[in-house]
Image (cartoon, rainbow, N blue to C red; front, side, top):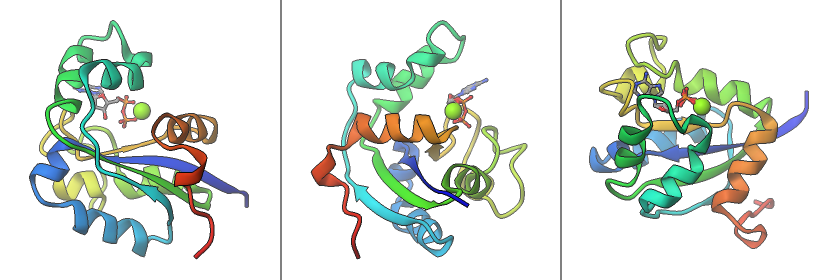
Length: 142
Ligand code: DAT
Ligand code: MG
């Protein structure tokens, strides 16, 4: 299997609920290596840019509002099969549909405020990591 990278974002609801440590612990226990991690507050423009693929969808304005409503924690991750394994760890977009034991099932209130982001392909993983991190912020050793 190939080593892949994926981007996680602990969304503003995760930070507000003081679940940052708990969710990072689950990610580490699942075998992901943390290459980079930071806490930032997205502007509406930056949040809109990150989710540009959803522009025009009925939930887009609410999504941009939510993602800029408080600080979030982007995390660059690496692992064999990282993209699929991370999507399995976080569960379906709507916590109602998420499997038991997944991060969204455990912690998310609804589809709009669903605690955590995960990239949907290895290519997007690289693009999304580059959206938040420069090369020197990604530490491969240790
Ligand atoms: P995912 O985050 O599981 O990859 P997505 O890429 O389809 O899901 O959508 C991005 C985010 O947009 C999602 O995490 C929450 C929000 N969203 C998607 N569909 C929604 C809907 N029908 N109602 C409210 N928010 C939605
Ligand atoms: Mg997605």
